[in-house]
Amino acid sequence: MNSSSTLINALFIFVLAGFIGFEVIRRVSPLLHTPLMSLTNALDAIAVVGAIVLVGEHKSHLSTVFGFIAVVAATSNIVGGFVITDRMLKMFKSSRPQNPAAKSAAK
Amino acid sequence: MTPEGGSIQVVIELLYLIASVLFILSLKWMSSPTTARHGIWAGEAGMVLAIGGTLLNHGMDYRLIATALVLGTIIGVPLGRVAMTAVPQRTALSHAFGALCVTLVGSAEFYLRSPNISRFMMAVLSLEVILGGLTVTGSLMAAGKLQEVLPQRPLTYKGQNFVNFLLLLGALAIAITLVLHPESRSLFPFMILIALAFGVLLIIPIGGADMPTVISLLNGYAGLSAAAMGFVLNSKLLIIAGALDGSSGLILSIIMSKAMNRSFTNVLFGAFGQVQISAAAGEEARPVRSATPEEAAAILSAANRVIVVPGYGMAVAQAQHKVRELYDALTKRGVDVRFAIHPVAGRMPGHMNVLLAEADIPYDRLIEMEEINGDFPQTDVALVIGANDVTNPAARSDASSPIYGMPILDVDKAHTVMVIKRSMNPGFAGIDNPLYYLDNTLMLFGDAKAFVGSIVRELGGGHS
Picture 1 (tube, chains in turn green, purple):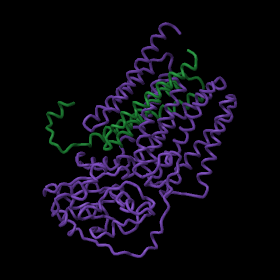
Picture 2: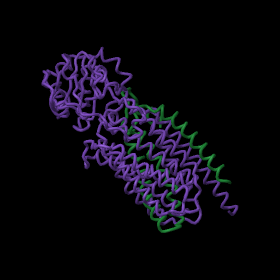
Picture 3: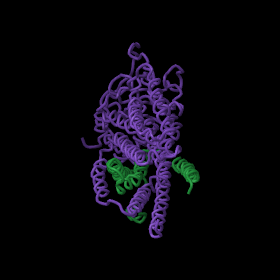
Picture 4: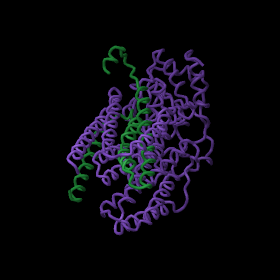
């Protein structure tokens, strides 16, 4: 594949994903802005896949060391981000009576 | 590529595609608290598929990868278990980690590929490491200020913007040189160093009140740098995740800057922390009316409608659980209690909601500013706990006020306003608040937690 068509493909994806992001995130309740930020942080740590390849391919010492630190940093974001987002969302309760049966059925 | 290797690549790409869809669903489900937890499961499933898919690549050093993954998990778990009051600094720290990953991968890619690197690729790679580098140090600075290991006061000096501008220009000059001459590898570390220094200088003039905007902005930068990394690695998954994170950060920054009446460009170029300190100390002491916990309890229990306005002071005093007891005691007496949440109350977007939810206050009692502002005139008591600038009526009426034009909660329109405050010292921005001198305002002097506790005792509820 020539490099300019790769670039155009990548730009298409970026712009369209940006639009989806705007439309989806605009609808997030301000109530949940803090968990939203910790969740996007965890998702953003998908950069770990690039770092994993660096470590796995072992092309140079520098790239392996940098990749290793990068995997550690990103993994801690993934784990920490999901854990804290889950903890926060568990705390949000409605005052409307909700019987336990209906709650477990909803799961 | 062997045919077998080709089909594995297809499988990996398909896994990435499913992961991208799951990420988008994950954010979509965050729109309401009732579906939000599905969002986490979608996100986690996407993450597992993406990482699993990556491990399918041939000839990887699995032992080293596993070590890094385990080490990251060991660091990540405690970071996920911090106290809710520490969430702002944890968030800033995780922006730093995310950006660190992106910057390191970008640097490694540069040294692997240079000088065989196309101009476009070099430009994107420069963008990646400059944005990433400044986000690393900027976020660390923000986390340090929030954790109070660094001085929280904004530090300003003459020509600050000029110095920052020069630094940015220097980084761009190196980037352009590298685009034209990708073989000048010795220049690359300087570009990173300048980006790191720029991040520090960007946050030095930031005070606490600007933190919600700054954290959102750093979130946006982290996302954009990850998207740039996606371009460099030609990874569609990364471009999508970066674009989602970037747009989330930018949307939150726009919401925050609107809530502080700053233009978005003003925020984007780091010209925050510019609120000049007005001469508050020299003014004559105007009379205020104050009240005791007993009086406050009597007024609250006689009310029909109460709106509580929480601010950062509530978080500092750790008063949210006492506030919950007050909510219970009043609700039991048939008083309608709601909470008015200003978008920039606290130190990050949604900060107050999380603290109140942690204290078990139902989320349908937490009302946004636009929705609740019209209700203040029909409200018997507005109880302000640790909030200052977001209730300052000067923002509506006094064109000379530094916060003039900022949307505020119209607490002064309630029949009675009660303000819990340590002393008459002006708030973070150093701006005097005319609210305190109004005829319908009662000042409740004391620590927020202790004072709310005394009111609860007077009401005969709670357990202290």
